[in-house]
Image (cartoon, rainbow, N blue to C red; front, side, top):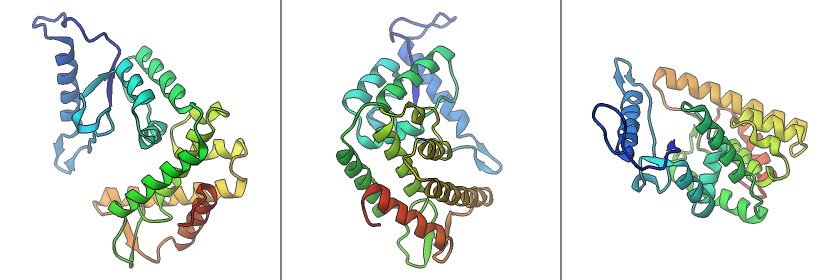
Length: 243
C-alpha cells in the first residue's frame, strides 16, 4: 500500500509542476517499476497491490485519512487480518508514526469473538479451496491443512480477538513474536506456543530454500507429518473447528 498525508490539493513546486494526486500516482508507479525490475536471475520482487482499499479498482496511492475511513467503515475481516502483518517499509517518520497509531486503533477494536472466528475460518476454507494442493500425494507448505497459513491465521485471529485487552499484541507484526506474546500473555500454553513456533520456522526455512532454487514449496505428502498433525490439532483447539 502507498499512503500519503497531504490534503491532495495543489501542485508540486518543481520546475514542471503537476497536480499532487498525479505526482503521488506517478511516484507509486515508479516504485513498482523499480521493485519488479527484471534481472538476469528473474524479476526482483513480486508486487501485489490488491490489498489497497477497493483492491484493483481503488486508487494506487491513498491518503491516510481515506485509508482510515475505509478501515473503520468498509474493510472486511480479512483486510484487518492483513493489517496485523502490516508494517512501514519506507517513508516519512511522522507519517509512519501516524500509520502505526491508526493500525493500533483499528486492530484494538473490540470484536464479537464468535463472529470473528467464523469470518477467519470461512476465509481459511476459501483459500484452501482455491490454493491448496489438489493431489493427495503432495503437501503444499503454505496452503494445505496444517501448513504455514493455518499458523498465520491463528496469530491474526488472536490479535484481532485480544488486542483490546492486551496492547502488547500490537507491538510486532511477525508471527514468531506474536506467538511469544500470546504465550507471555497466557493465551497459549508454553508447549503449544513452542510447537507452533517450531513448525512455522521449519516450514519457513524450507520455503526460503525452495525460493532460492526456483522450486515450488510443494513436498511429498509424507513430509512434516508430525508438524502438520500438531498444527491441525492446535487449529481445531484454538479455532473451535476440526480440520
